[in-house]
Length: 624
Ligand code: F6R
Image (tube, rainbow, N blue to C red; front, side, top):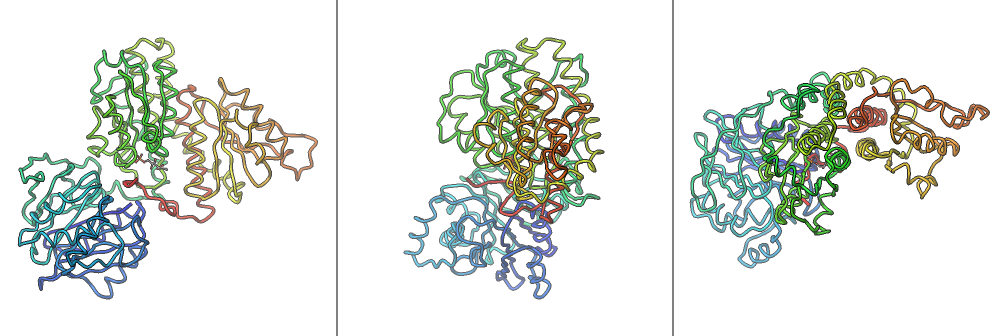
């Protein structure tokens, strides 16, 4: 999605903007631009289609010079990727420049009105109306002009605005799209994501909806849209400046997969210290009476976070005995669900900014549901609008394909379900202890799985040239199959689908053949015998098989193997095995996620794909 970085100070703004935009590259973009106020009192603008390296080359050839500037990476929504459509956009008189994230919903009416007043448009974007509106209202006071312009807008936005005639100022304003103001000494910053400016400062103001900021070298004034001053607390970014660097890992995704043992420890800390002690939760803002009274839990999220919600549905019903659903956030709004009293909505989101998820939250809140967010990014929009928050504590996740956030979302939800179950008295002390022991062992299990990376690589080498894959599972691991297939398709571009293995005979088995590999998740437990049956059916139809099983399962490698088959026939080959340490059924989705992330990673790597920036994808989807 689009990225914004702006700077007011004494150093060269293009350097700061470009470095900040590079830290947002992972979010996905197709064009970029930077605009500065020059010493001569003009604006100087550079825009390019393609990667930031193209921008760097252009700046090397002909530098932009100025200590006040705004930069942007654009992920096209209104109008194709082109120089004209990339940001910053200039006003008709060329004295005002604007960068924008979000979507202005009433831009067509505004554009028609502005054109009738003589303003001249150069792009197909919704953003450009803002540049002309600010010019229309500007009479020497940039903040006042931006304020009046914002009052005309409907939709979602975060803006950075500079003006050649107010050369020492930058304006920032937001509604629904994320924005922070970074605090320096004699210099200040704006960014759509704190990661963009963490290398410059660890102190930021997190800006709220309809808040307007006037930023100069020496000061930051935050007001509402009536210009009432807002006294905002400084937020100190808790992660180190190099947390958003790859370190020794070839890719961010690889680094983040390998961070899981420590991340799991951090997520458990303060919540579960011993198998004999009850779970504790801070900040979820639910009383024991409320927890006892819930009659329904609805998990709402998109993509990977939705898969964690599907695990949550299973656990909340099984452990806390509360009827539960998991809804795709985009579909929730279409369905206009009936929300009865005593409903809890658990909103799952890594970024806390996903547009559909945020809208789902608002819809459920409006219907009277209590909201608890399971979120990674502290103080994000979803975190702020939830009644209570259980932070997953993953630290920054840069790789577009979510990995550590997924396992920690499940872990946090599992702790929440157990916490509820202990208060509601729906889990026996023996079972609670058994689950807790497995949760406490997770960091070591995760470490063991990472040490087996070469085994997963060997499996990847056998199948990375396939064009298609089917991931099968049952029960609590059905979402593991859904997530494994999503990981594979989004970074390797191998077509991958997930099915309940129980559905195989109702259609998908028609696809099975040598060009497709089938991955069956078959840990010993309640679904094991049926999974073994499915493996045999697939082998009998010459489908290459990868089986995920617990350590010590000696029979599954040979399951369905026909000893009389010709050695060239797949039916005669042993199954390719991915072993995971044995754990409780309810904990297994977390351990099983790790080798499936590694499998997707290595398949994509063997195919030479851009793992951290897969095509067409953005890390945070802030538009609907
Ligand atoms: C896939 C992936 C996405 C996100 C989804 C929701 O690897 O990362 O499917 O899970 O876009 O994002 P958040 O969790 O930020 O709301």
